[in-house]
Length: 379
Image 1 (tube, rainbow, N blue to C red):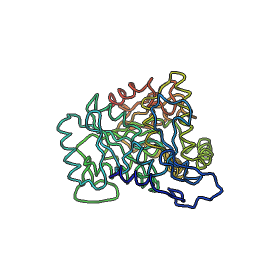
Image 2 (cartoon, rainbow, N blue to C red):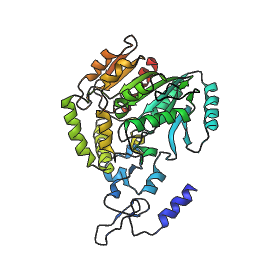
Image 3 (cartoon, rainbow, N blue to C red):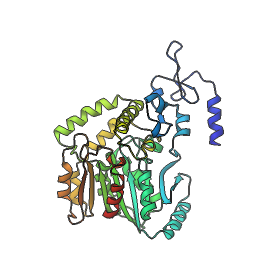
Image 4 (cartoon, rainbow, N blue to C red):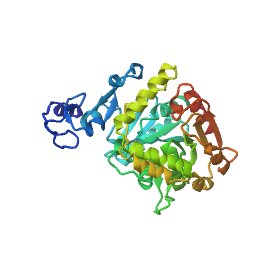
């Protein structure tokens, strides 16, 4: 049915922007979707860029980035937009659950897979700003293939399957709670309160957040601290509340708020092209971009990060914390060392810095295996 609907869309003749339905002026430059050639306005043409070729073919921007209309973007993206979260619980495959999947169906599937794996550990992967649930699919799959640990990957509001939802700290907490509840990982006790004390789990949940997912992770972990047994926080070596860092983030936020998704993706691929020429190859780099990028609410994303001061939350987290960072991460201020000293569980919390690694060190072939093994040792 999806293929028929997409074919009907491609064959339709339109004189309006396919995405926002605004009129296309007769004298304006005719911009079209690279796949179905539907007309798009000057704003929407840059809204849904996508990588359609393998990362080995990365030579120039024109060869690797396609500018698509919304229907084509959803058709060619590796994301399942009907699913708010994915469960990695089988070898080299994943299961996506839609909003129409019944709670019993989800729980029956997960209960079956639990019987086939002795590991009680379930990783909950939280992506970075502008990313989506597919960004850490390779890491989650390795965790199951190597060690039998299952994973949940979910989208934050304003990203992926939740692209149209407004992003706030509270909406992020709701997205996390829904993913855990609807996957059958947590279940409710016969009472309700605002502290989420009425939920419990039989698994050992480990939160794994990177960049944006790590910074707001401090807030999320404090909100659901009775459900988690530990956390891995990557690419979060800055104290966003410090004036110097805050001013830099504020300026960066203003700049990025005026950038399109196409411009963001162009920056990523330009960086990748330079690094590939240095034999510095990202692990499954194309999967990071073949799901799309989502920066339409970038200013609100920055607001969320800047409103979280890790120092306010770390002293209230009794479980161990693992901090992983790249030494060449942009503007890294070594705040991660202070976070480590504040951690309650000093015996099991630790910090590891990958020298030569940048903000995306977790997807760098030089460090990928060690990151996977380090997280496994931690749990």
